[in-house]
Length: 97
Length: 396
Image 1: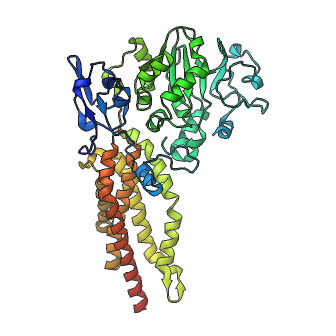
Image 2: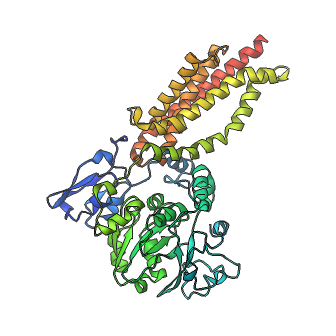
Image 3: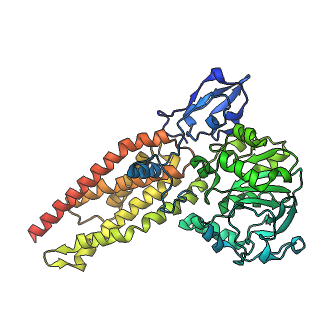
């Protein structure tokens, strides 16, 4: 299954890549692959913008506006005038199980 | 959440009485290093949780040993967590636990303090001697908490130090679930604690294999799957929350349908109320059950479009194959046909948050299109209802 991919914000700066392989390891959708001694974008359109790769790239080769692809979080954010928020309960705890 | 933990504390399950070193009532206070930094609740008679089976004597004091078998109580928790807001009560105490009989060379497995996360871990590591480090994620699962940052670098660094992990193990490896990676920077953890983060597999079921392969995950173990059962199990939550709102809708329908110049008439309320109720239920099932379960069947990527298609199909089905809409005025029929496919679409859009593959930029994009359509549809339907009622009241 693929989702709308036209707005995905993932950016890969190949020049900064050292080929450590962390991004290949942490991506849950196989967006990256190792090719020779560097990572390559193999399936950018499968990116869910979770941010795992960027957070774990020690060389700043990856950039993504990470967030949770959740409509209610975005609506909650709109109502409160904040960033998208998963906190649907007043107690400030989970809505996602 | 701390108070709620008490609700799930059951009697200590003594599968292995020989491992009981301390009397149960004192299990946490006689330890020089409590399992968390939370204020000790000793004296209030806190029992060990039902999912533990005694104490392990570690270099940092006695630690609760998790049971590797799930009990009926655990399964009951899972059922309630999937169907209601009960999951909010399923936080476990953060801190260090033992599985089996861990020693200085044993691996450290990190998880969230959501009981379903811990359950998934402990039932899959039977026979493995390991340390379990439970992070405080406010009772939220690893992936969601990582997205929010509560399952994150700071919390992990803090727990490593609070637990005195460096005294428990000689090595400097910690196995963090791969889905914790959006919150945990392996580089920062290494710099701040000296521990090297090994990102384990997505599924807890693969952990033993991951370790036996020398901390290597196959490509298969690295990918998130989202099969039909994964989707089905997530639907009761949404269905439950929308069905709770149904009485208000029914009240509105009954009053609206039965409203005459003579007051609200029950007989009239049923004639129009029945089709409107059936249509609403069909829309709910289309958007919150059929769309998620049959997600790949409609080729469009937009959830709003998928949901609208199933909603429109269900209205068409009711129109052509049942006589439930027979007798509806055209104005009312138009309102039904506009409003309910959009309700189905809206509910389907809500499911984006439960999926494993939607990206926030895409959700924003489809919302920019869908929200104005929903608002317009609601406005048009309301106008049609007013026209319908006005005509009816004038004609009577």
